Image (tube, rainbow, N blue to C red):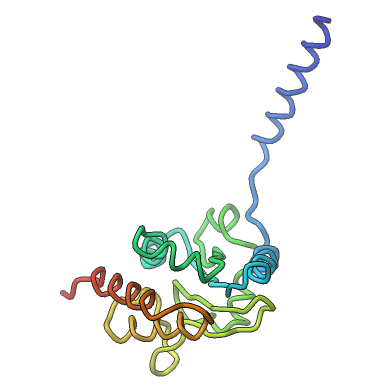
Length: 183
C-alpha cells in the first residue's frame, strides 16, 4: 500500500515539474476570434475586438474604462469583449503575443493604426466598424478628446442593435470625466 502512495506522489511531482517546465504559449488569434463569434451568436451580441500590448498605456486606460464600475455592465450587456495581444517587444513576443494576431489586424485595416486599435464585428465575422473613424481614417485609440468621444460613442451605437441612449450618455459622461488633462 505504501508503494502505491509513493508512486502516486512521484507521478504527481513529475507531472507538476513537466507543466512548470513548459512555457505557456498564448492562444492563436483565430481560435480566440472563433470562440468570440460563437459566444456572440449565442448571446445576440457584437464582438468588440481590441488589439493591445503590455507596454501600451492607452490600451490599459481603455481596458480600465471598459471594466470600470460605471461602464462594465453596459459593455458586457452589448458586446463580447475580446483581446488580441500584438506588437510586443523583445522576449514578450513569445510569451504574450497571440500567434496570427498581427496578420488579422492587418486584414482588418489596423496595420498602421497604432494601439489600441479595435474592431466591432457581428457574430459571423463581418466588420461593423473599426477605430480608424477619425478624419483621414485616423485611429481613435483611447477616446480622450470631445471629437474622439463622439465618434467612439457613434461606433458603439452603430455596432449594437440594442444599446440605448441612456447607456450611450453614460459612456460619453465617463470618457469626458476621464479625459486626459491638456498640458
